[in-house]
Length: 134
Image (cartoon, rainbow, N blue to C red; front, top):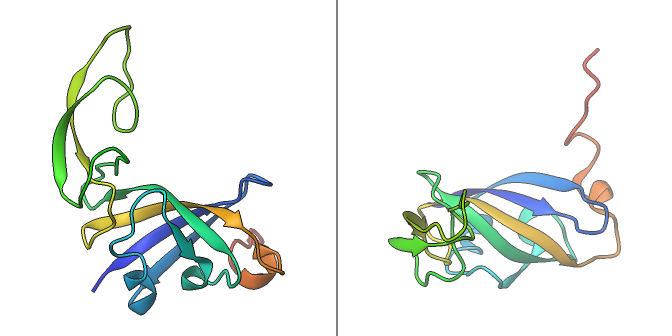
């Protein structure tokens, strides 16, 4: 059974929301690829639409949008996800995960593309990120 950590970014105000999803809600993400849209009800954001923007697997390898499938692949990268060159023209072979979500995926990054009637804070309740440690 799949379980994921979903990190949802709100491009309007820059806030991020962190969710742990398992069971049937997690299965909604299986087979989806980077760039596809998903119903936000799976993470408690009813009426919202989320776009998958990336993620990583159990070993920390990043998902890359230009690698098809769910498996790992060693690619020769000159820039982009999984490699940050330190000088002009540098290329390096890196191992990345494909763009489709599978059971090996542990973190999924998403952003809000369509909003519901209520704000995310009101849907999630007050207990999510309380910083009152008195």
